[in-house]
Length: 284
Image (cartoon, rainbow, N blue to C red; front, side):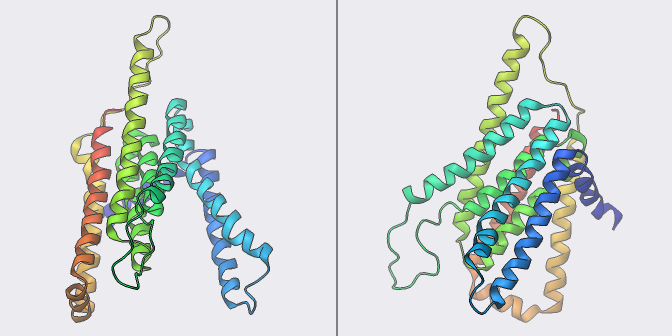
C-alpha cells in the first residue's frame, strides 16, 4: 500500500514545494469548493438565483479555477529557476487551448443523419481533454527530474478522470478526446523543441555560459514505476467492480462495445503519452 501511495505523496509534496504552486493549488481548491456550493444553491433555488450569482458561479469561479491550475506548473519552473520553462509552459497552455477553440468551428461535422443526436456539432476536438492533458504535460515538464515520474502518473490520472467524467455525461465522443490529446501533445512537443533549440544556441554563443542546469538522470525503471503503479491500481479497481457486479458490467460492455473500446483506448493513449514524455525528459 505504501508503494502505491508513494507517487501520490510525492506529487502533493511537489505541487506545494513553492509559493506560486501552493497559491495555485489553494486558489483551485477554493474556487472548486465555492463553485460546487453555489451550483448546489442554484439547483435548489426556486428562481435559479440572481444573475450576479450566475456570473460568479459560471464565469468568475471557473476562470479562477483555470488560473490556479495554470499557476502550478509555472510555479514549479520558477522554483527551479527555469524561467524559460515557465514562459514556455504559459505559451503552450495558451496556444493549445486557443487552437482547440479555433478548430471546433472549422471542423464542424456535417449534420447527423438521424433526427436526434446526443452530442452537438463542433465537439472535435474536446476542449476539456485539451486543457486537462496540456496541464498534465506542462506540469511534467516543469517538475523536478526526480519527482517527474510521480507527477506524470498523478497528472495522467487527473486528465483521464476529467475525460471519463464528461464521456459519462455524454458531452463528447471518444474521438473528441483523441483530438484534444493530439493538440495537447503537439503543442507540448513544439514547446520543448523550441526551448531546446533556443538553449542550445544560447549555450553555443560566445560569452558567459548560458547553458541550462543539468538535472539528475532518472533510470528507465524509476521513470516507469509510478505509471506502472497507476496501471496496477486501475486493474485492481476493474477486478473489484467485476467481482461486485459482474452481470451489469458485462451487459453494459456488450451494449456499448465501441464506447468501451474507445474508453480503453483513451486510457492506453494517456498512459503512453505520459510515459513517453517522462522517458524523453529523464535526462533533463
